[in-house]
Image (cartoon, rainbow, N blue to C red; front, side, top):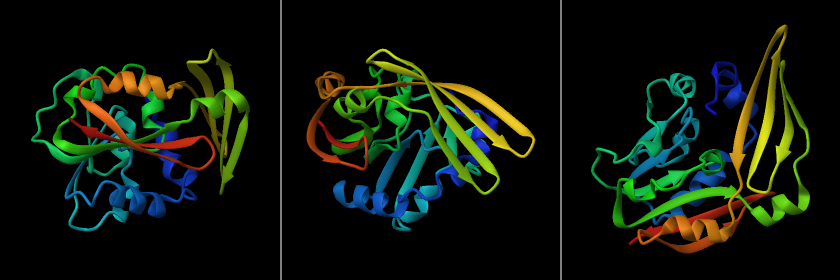
Length: 213
């Protein structure tokens, strides 16, 4: 499921309280201060401003509506399509639940990343998800309301109904998100990556740092 126009339009507003600055500073240091970063699922790329100014960033996203909101900073591309035609980067990232939106992970070998470079991403901690379960959440920012309602979770995938309201305008879309275990991540690494570190984040968030072999 791609983020559609209505959600994309209000995405930055609804997430304005997220500690982007703190998280980007952590990621940058954790990745040993990379000069070049390939950002998967970059969305509007609003958080890029927290990287040092000399950092070279290239972002992709499969949602054309999110790409439009990025003001030309992000290119439209589905990471699962195959080999990517760019020289290798120092670091690759997939931030803020991007990995949970991707159902298949046989594309990792095609990430344009240098040998020894880091692939950093966050995803939901499966044990916490299974223990706590999904609940309906409501967020209101200014005149925009978002209601996220779980429609079903089978231990591997959850279907979420996302309702956006602003004045008389309403929009609903269905998001399918996937929950991965630590063993799943090790399997996705194959012979191309190794897990070198993990860090707990807020609530369900788990940060993972992989190295290209």
